[in-house]
Length: 287
Ligand code: GLN
Image (cartoon, rainbow, N blue to C red; front, side):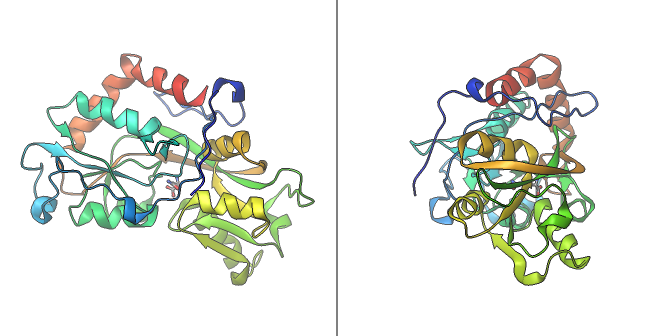
């Protein structure tokens, strides 16, 4: 799979869409892009990971390990470099957060976004860090940390294409893509429900990277995706943000419902914010 990597984040600094969550900084600019899809074949279950099946019912792994899971292909939150290294804001944030607890960070496990909640609940992973929006549906299945980011949805289109919609109504009769199991998909489903789109207009992807590729190739006309990631793709690919949909989403780290480590994670998250580390990570990945 071809990958692209922008070497100069700051060259792409933009201020569009910056939003704030009370008590934390959350800019929304970005730059690196990877075309790497989340491939189950590449899942790294790491020897150090304590992922025994029974772990789901305990508050910690055998060695006090927290095994993090993510879905790369969501730059700059999580993506792979040309060398295949898993990097991103979420990856660094989790290292900083868990590093401030008594727990050890296990090896990252990657999978499609839609598999994360099931993998958390069956004990394969202990923590989801995937730009995951806190919402009621998910809150019934898992627990979330305090929010660490805020985002809206964006509709992206080909940069120099004829199709330049300015509102959701303009999407009517066009092929619209999103990643399976996301809040972007929820937006598309809402448009199908209200008759703006027909069900056959929807193109569902396992990974946003594939959706953006299809957009560039003309196989889909628009993609609904979180604003900070849309900005990153817009800076690095032949796509542009046509308009945004204000959804006021907030990202949280996911833990199992019975996992009382959430308070240690929240304390550490507050520390990371208070000591300036959070701002450093924002500067590294979004400015
Ligand atoms: N924030 C969106 C959601 O939670 C998209 C997350 C993602 O694609 N990694 O559904």
